[in-house]
Image 1 (tube, one colour):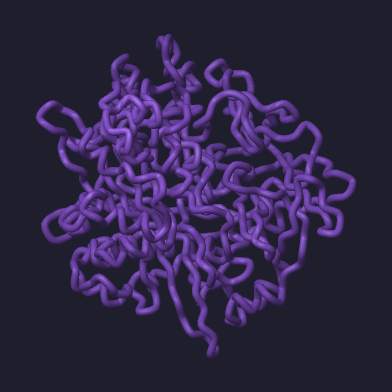
Image 2 (spheres, rainbow, N blue to C red; image 1 turned 120 degrees about the vertical axis):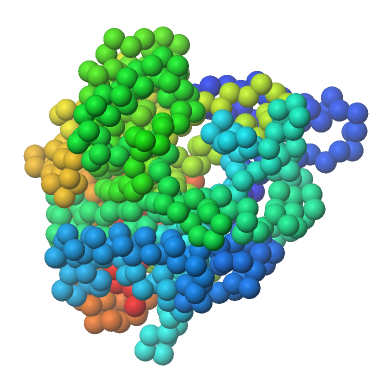
Amino acid sequence: MRSFALALLALACSSPPTARRYPVPRPEEEQRSGSNEAAPRLGEVVLVTDRSALAEVASAGGTFAGMIGGAHHAAAHNQTLAKNTRYRSIVAVLEQDLQAIARADPRAGVGIRGNDHRLFDARWLRSPHARFELIGVASRLDRIPLSDKQCGEARLVYRLAYTREISGESVSSRLPMTAVLALAEDPPDANGSCADSATKWRAPLGVARAGLGRWLISEAGPLAPGALVATRVSRVEINMQSVRWPSAVRPDLGGHAEYVMRVFSATADSFAVAPLMNTPDVGKLRKKSQLRAKLLDWLRNPENAKRVDDATIQVPDNFLATQAVSVTPRGLARRANRPYRQLFSAADFSGMSFDGYAVARSPEAYLRRLDDLTCNGCHQARTIAGFHLLGEEGGSQAAGNGLAVWFSPHLFDEARRRATISHGVASGADVDFARPFAERAVLGAGRYGDHCGLGDPGFANWTCRPGLACNRYDASNDDAVVGVCLPENTEVGDPCEVGGLQPNANPHRDRVRAVAERDCPPSAVCNDNRVGFPGGMCTESCASLSPEGTCGVIAQLRPFNDCLARKTPFPKCLAEHVSPAGMRACGATSPCRDDYICALTPDGAGACIPPYFLFQLRVDGHP
């Protein structure tokens, strides 16, 4: 698969299928009308994930340790970094979060053996074997309306990883935790334009891989010398899988996992806990009815409501939480992922006028849009197990532990909008910053796995392509407005054991009780929820693959877990306790349905598989 970064360089050259069109000239038309016929053709760089390009950025000072702790920490592992007060201010809060989970749940503990609920091992945060790897560089000019007197942000995205020697064998893996560093961009010029900042993110179309990295850190690039300094970090955003329950513990859901989300703002010598943008403090607002009523009035205000529709709203801090927990599987069907839905109902927004709105076109759509703007709602909308970016794979990942696609379906579609905005800002065009729903960035006829409307007028344009039908799937009785596009005739990879979710504000009490079986094709069998396949999944023999299928591997559940419990290095367990199976083929433009990832197959293709079958996406089983 070619680098995602290379695909994005030319995205602004075509008209993006987003909710709104942007009046932006195409780059090739702009070049023809210019006076310099020999000027290089440029493309908008909005996300770089190529490993060789990122290595250039890291070598120029873009390591996590260098950006957090200063230049003398540039090559530090986490044990050395933990000597730095700025890093410790973050780690101390995360350790307290994990301790609170352990105190509240006697079944939670680190490791597989003896623990029904597997807790994140906080020792990784101070370990000499662990470090944060740079997995992405992003331009966020789309955040200009949300930035205080700045031209958006640049973002450096990191993922926790480790290398250890176990029984004489070197074992490496990434872990389900990301850290995003937000770097403040320059302020607008005297005319209020951010064109200069946007122009820095325009690269020659021919530049690639390590050359792209060298361009990023060159005098002409957005990370020019002097840009990668710790003092430029304005905010740190953490998304960490805190605990995972295996499917044996939650057989109706196919397992359960929780992700702690935190934001820290930079101070002189540390990082302080900060409010999560647009994410309400449900506990506080439930206790303080007057404050809840004020929030409702604020959200019903027509000016504020229009900004909700555009996704340019910023809810005041006094309503906001400083910690959020998102849960998987089942996305926005889980009430924990919908904080506004816990506080309000669609009836609270009846009587409002939604005329002219692009996405929030009914009370139900308005309420869902509010949850779409929260941290936990966004990170459970067409994601990879609660993440939007997990990093391009290298050549050394263990077989059975690699991603074929390392970015979410949402991010792939959203990047087109960001590229168009970037080009518009650089060109001085009139740019519309409105954002579609995270779970449905491209309107019209949806692909396999896309979300679709079940009849509410606010989702009338969430349709499915011919051959696909909008299936209710896991929508609850009190919230059956959005389903999923699935084949009219069941195919390999499709759900085969589904039922409406009975949601609860406490995600531990969510249940799928009335499970209905859905017939698989004659050549396939149903792998059900209780063995880790959310919604069930039709699989077939590798000897008789259907047109939608490819051959992957599935871990043999009990022998595999027993192998791990004996502290055997997981690459050996993966090699010895897996079986071949025909699963749905996938790729960047053909994503899996919710709660499945596109994993590398033995022959280098992509197959849809539950995320926690990959070690890098679960907290347990690591040395």
